[in-house]
Length: 262
Image (cartoon, rainbow, N blue to C red; front, side, top):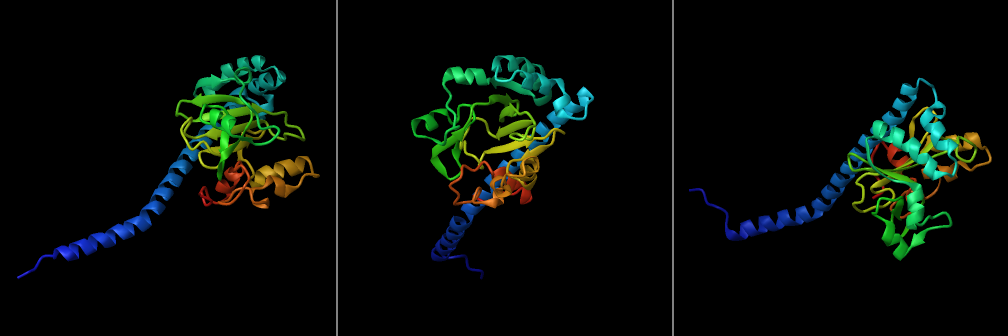
């Protein structure tokens, strides 16, 4: 006659299962979160790159700098009220924008900027998660880095911060792009849900601090230090870095679109 399990045997088995689950679950959850972020990043990467390339194609030119969009945006200089017309004409059509928080309005609202260094304390906590480009450091949620740039909310909930550049030796590319993958939701931290790219004159989206990114800067200005612009040239994206984490886009792209630093 087949005997069933005793209560002691059942409890022992459940105890073993519980121990194994406690050891394995954190890793499984962490890996799941990484996959969610990477999937969101890939989707947005493709959509934004397609938007800029479509602008070039529809304008029937070879370079982004020859499009009306770029010309209007850069011709305004520091007149950000003027830039509104350029944004409004193109952003909804090519990037499915549903809301915009313009630079000029951010200035009026007192949004701070990290031009002189990191922002800490109350100012940091006040502005993170509000839709502006102000985010916590990768490994330090007591300080933030951010600057004023026009912020647009996409239909999928992503917030994109961007600024047009002049394709010169200081900014040898066309556009700065920062993607906050889940909008105002946390953690609002560089390298966790916020990633940085530049757009070159052909409409290519290039991860910040990737080898290509560093090459662009050094080619345009040979006096620059390559390692200062490359994520692996210093401790710019790791579990222990004290840097803000904006270099992590480059690391992710060059490690096969994986997150290996959480």
